[in-house]
Amino acid sequence: MLAVLDRLARPLLRLVDPEDAHSLALAALRLAPLARPAAEDARLAVTAFGLTFPNPIGVAPGLDKNALVPDALLRLGFGFVEVGTVTPRPQSGNPRPRLFRLDRDEGVINRLGFNNDGAEAVLRRLASRAHHGGIVGVNVGANKDSPDRVSDYVRLIETFAPVASYFTVNVSSPNTPGLRNLQQGHILDDLLAKVIDTRERVRTKAGDTPVLLKIAPDLSLAELDEVVQVARSRKVDGMIVANTTVARPSTLREVARAKEQGGLSGRPLFRLSTRMVAETYVRVEGAFPLIGTGGIDSGGAALTKIRAGASLIQLYSSLTYKGLSLVEDIKRDLSSTLLRTGRDLLSEIVGADAATITAEAWPV
Ligand SMILES: Cc1cc2nc3c(=O)[nH]c(=O)nc-3n(C[C@H](O)[C@H](O)[C@H](O)COP(=O)(O)O)c2cc1C
Image 1: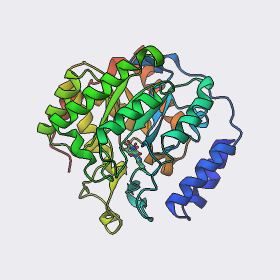
Image 2 (image 1 turned 60 degrees about the vertical axis):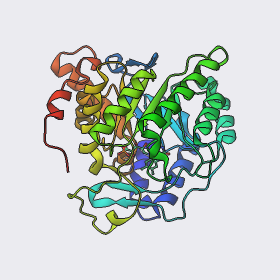
Image 3 (image 1 turned 90 degrees about the vertical axis):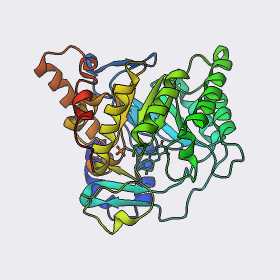
Image 4 (image 1 turned 180 degrees about the vertical axis):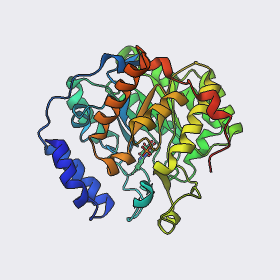
């Protein structure tokens, strides 16, 4: 039912402003009667950060910033949903237009700037759906005008610990000026120390909530060395690689649109973000698992990301171009790959190509 609606609606949604199209799609998801999800292939289940994911394909944050439709997304077959980025106080974000499609590149540029309903509203929604279960992570960030950004993260961990399956500490959005400076060694060390300390403090009340760190694909390898070293020493539970890029690959065809300021995602981000997954994987040395995100738009792309080092993957931009049925297509492809190669579990191929990928020429 939804797949049919999706196929009919997508050409029409292309005709309206991308942000209006996004709001319409969320409204449709809230209203559409959803069938039961198809049965899961047990070989695609992944255990990571102490959680068991029914399959490795998640919804990346940004799609459901305000936790309006996590259950609809789970029932479409996603293994997990990450809501947010949520900031302590509601925020309207940058002036519109701030979301652009690069149709010929199957890419997206956004400079939304953490527009969201704020912690109180999002907490209310997550608390009211908690009995449904399923893995719903909460991506947290600082308000643009916050006088103390570190304390924003701390407050959010306290607030959401009872309802979050995991946390993502987002220090990599390019659309809040100065936010990415939190990736600098000593600043990151202080931030993660306080975040982990807060998680420990609320543990008796809220349980053991994994904390993941989401990084930008634009870090230099020297910066990545430092980030991974801090993440390991502060014992985060995992990393998400990567957020959108401020780079503009030379291969882009939508040259005029590419000049818009903001973070680029979708297919043009695939090579860079996959390289960063592999670079992170070799530095982490198995200390914790990675979630790979950036330009995954097919079973083949999902497999490449997993072989680069991702135990789990997340999608966003490709859903605009390929539709929501993409999740089932990718699962089918991953299952048939396992069958064809005689593997019992997806985890057997995680990172299989990391060393090869890190030896290739840098993607431009
Ligand atoms: C419109 C839009 C909004 C986004 N908002 C957020 C956000 O609030 N927090 C975040 O961590 N990432 C955000 N992202 C980044 C995505 O979560 C993801 O890391 C990135 O888009 C790469 O995946 P993709 O190529 O599959 O889209 C956003 C991406 C897009 C396109």
